[in-house]
Length: 202
Ligand SMILES: C[S@@+](CC[C@H](N)C(=O)[O-])C[C@H]1O[C@@H](n2cnc3c(N)ncnc32)[C@H](O)[C@@H]1O
Image 1 (cartoon, protein in one colour):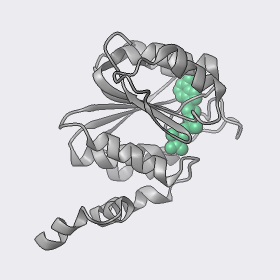
Image 2 (cartoon, helix red, strand yellow; image 1 turned 30 degrees about the horizontal axis):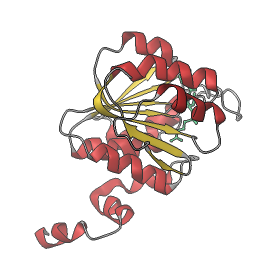
Image 3 (cartoon, rainbow, N blue to C red; image 1 turned 60 degrees about the horizontal axis):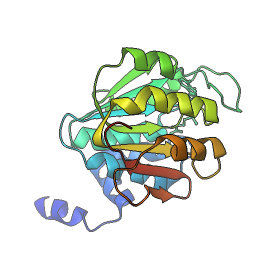
């Protein structure tokens, strides 16, 4: 068994996650690609014990479970903010909360669902954040409101990740206008996902 554990690190990330018991994460419906979900896992793994991870826009729990798989390993907490009413989604209004709860059962020790509108929840949220993942409404107005509400709570050197950066001009403009990367080089980007470490005062 020890030998198997030593070899795990040489296997592809997705195989690694399966062997560590995170297989159920892969079957949840989402528009995120496998590559994007694995990046969420890897970025969350960068943090130490008791880190605070916040996700805005959890929907059915696909991205949540990849954040939570890493949080389970480094004993951190994932706060999930959503109305769970398909806010701003083309699919139309639908209560998705029970589906989210049932899809994320494996991680109920790590996950704290905070049901309500992002801006309202932010007013009550006192913790400093290590990693902030924004995947709510992708219009400029909404994304800007999310960044204004949540970015000041991210620690210096913490990570912000925005989904749908590739196609949403609103998200791109919010990044240009409001996110100050800590490094001189702009934040690393995948085709549809932007992430960077942020500096104090962002
Ligand atoms: C694109 S989905 C999130 C997808 C999810 N991250 C995944 O892994 O598939 C957007 C979610 O954000 C939520 N949402 C949109 N605007 C919101 C707001 N202002 N406050 C709270 N939740 C919001 C919607 O209800 C929806 O569940």
